[in-house]
Length: 418
Image (cartoon, rainbow, N blue to C red):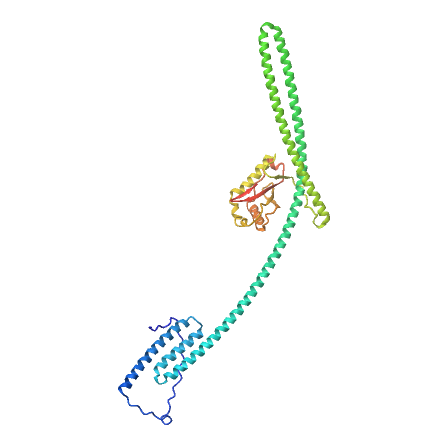
């Protein structure tokens, strides 16, 4: 095996101890033995074996040095010292066997010391790992405790916010009910006036028909012979016209009846909604009586307010304004602000946005929360980032100072307001 020096530079081995040469007077000199050819051949063979063994040992030491080069600095120093000692041993033929034994003892001691050091390092690593595991567990417990506290606080604040929103909705519903009652009275009065106008028109038509019949009777009396045939034709035509008018009256009556039925159903639905709202208010008043600290309602302002809960309303200007605001969310890539948070499990939130006449946002209220605080906060940011939403049209501004638009927010590939 060819010897190979390690890539890592080895430290210089310490100098070998000096060899003490015994004095001639103290050590009796050994008489040189007479060399013989057999003895010389044996010595040469032993020298070759020793050199081969020395080369093999040097190769082993070099391979050991390459393996030990990646270990701790202390082991590399010991290996270098052994290699240096081995080279010194090769130069000192007289002390080969003693030096070899000393090297073996030194290597055994080095291995024992290295094994003890590794065991100590392993025990220290185990101890550090146990301490780190205990610290991580304590940190995890602290984080879990902090998260639980934060969740409880967020839930409490969300409950308070929802309670305030419900109280505000009650106030707005009450005002809306008053407005609906007023509009219902106006609609009933308008229907009554329209019915009276139609009755007057019908009576006028009857009177005109009677006058026309009298005039025709006079003409028939003046030209009886010629008019008999014409009278018969006229009477037939009159009968057909009367039948047509009667059919038109029946169709008009049916349309009026259907319209009245539709209005009646709409009125009953509104009354049912009012009844449900009154029941909710009664339940909330009972709850407020039991818990006076939460019975305070928001202050009612003197502003003229309008409400649009859904997509349909008799006020066309209000519906068009709400649709324009919805399109602004759906078409302007607002969904990018919510793309990541809406991947969490949530319910479709119902949000009421109060808009002032100048297009600014007065208030954002969550009637139904999404259940994820990050989604609710992102919706608030979307609404505020796209403000203002344009001033009210003149007809709408003459009616309201503030309008409140309630929609359910749905997220798929964009924001949909339903």
